[in-house]
Image 1 (cartoon, one colour):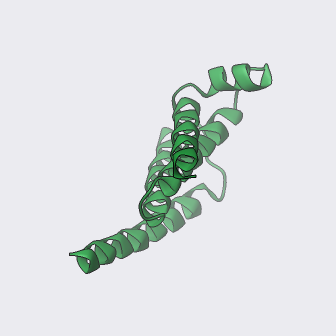
Image 2: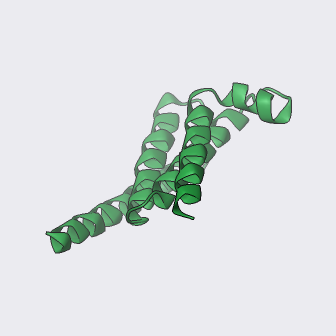
Length: 117
């Protein structure tokens, strides 16, 4: 059972990495259409979520998966805001919320590591 979970975690993380790096190609291969416009950042956020899912399912604490997601999505959404290509009314509140949650998760991971030592 554990080997199936590890294989699945690797597969999901690899798919997420592909969505993050070449979202249009993944769209073409999976759906038969290249992604364009707003579908690109949505696909990249989905890629980040799949990477985090892979990390969370890897043997070890699932908290690391959420920290991975929080960190990467905060950075990517902030990048989108600073680049100016996409900027809806909730973009910066989402960046701030994810930054706060990432800080709280970082604190919890630090506590967890202290408790293990």
